[in-house]
Length: 177
Image 1 (cartoon, rainbow, N blue to C red):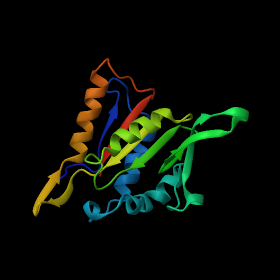
Image 2: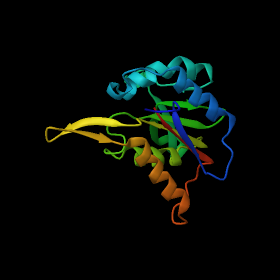
Image 3: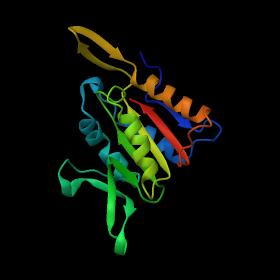
Image 4: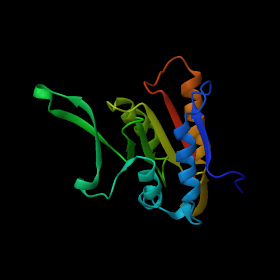
């Protein structure tokens, strides 16, 4: 059983978490659902949407092209956008990109994609990455439990402990829901 909901950790560990961290984790606490292990990331984002909008985030409306949030990465001749990535939510004043992952967040390497893509977004200063605490699925007829939050924390611990990779972000928030 989880003692505190949601679980969260801010990086780098030597920095005090900014005020927005408590607001975002509070939104997750307020949007807690009993069946989160069976929700898609879109369903979780829909629950979070009203609170995130109240906090000043732009939030993806749906999977339709017109409702997606595109953030530029690269501009070409005459300033034409050549490359952009989609993000679940973005706070334009704070530069916080929020990604909500469910299902195979660690198994499908979504956390790595989110780290790299956010690092390349022109206006992103922070990444808030939400993953399931546990992802349960069947493999070979057996119930398997993937500790997605702990695996994600382990990856970020390694990145921030190493001198080999430096993220161009002011900080990363990992939320376990």
